[in-house]
Amino acid sequence: MSEKSIGSLGKKPSISEVEMTELVLPNDANILGNLLGGRLMHWIDIAAAIAASRHCNKAVVTRAMESLDFKKPVHVGDIVILKAKLIWTGRTSMKIMVKVFSENLKTGQTMQTNEAFLTFVAVDDNAKPVPVPALLPDTVEEIFMFQKQEDSINDSRMNR
Image (cartoon, rainbow, N blue to C red; front, side, top):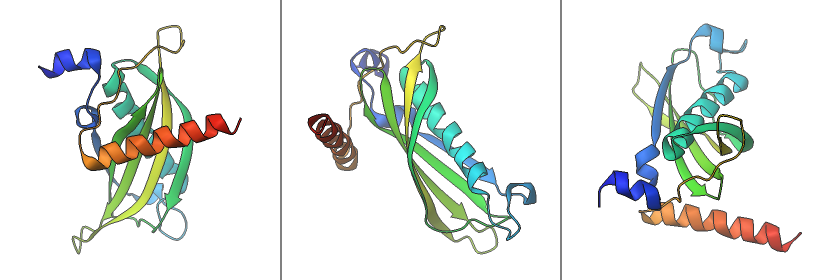
């Protein structure tokens, strides 16, 4: 079965994965020389939106940035690598995990600095929600993340 025909049934997370790279310049930093949180949030939103749009081949809107963990600072002159991947889909919504890494150009050291979870909704030309293809998790990690989201949604429905 080709990836085109799989799209009508669903899509694997790997099909829509995004890796985006940015260079932290002085204009991106606070007075301590660290990347501004707001700038990072902007880059995270863009990477996640591209992954969501790739999955559904539609325009998407940000519904929520559910969490963003700041684990380590990123400094001026570092490269930021953002890796966005779908981890769950509903009828019209998609949840994306974005892992953020920094790379020090002088030492070559790379470390994970942030992780974020966002929800996007696919929309038509009138900004009305439209259905998205199912997500077909393929690896053990993808299946675990998908099931974790399903469990979380089911728990929240039961507590209403």
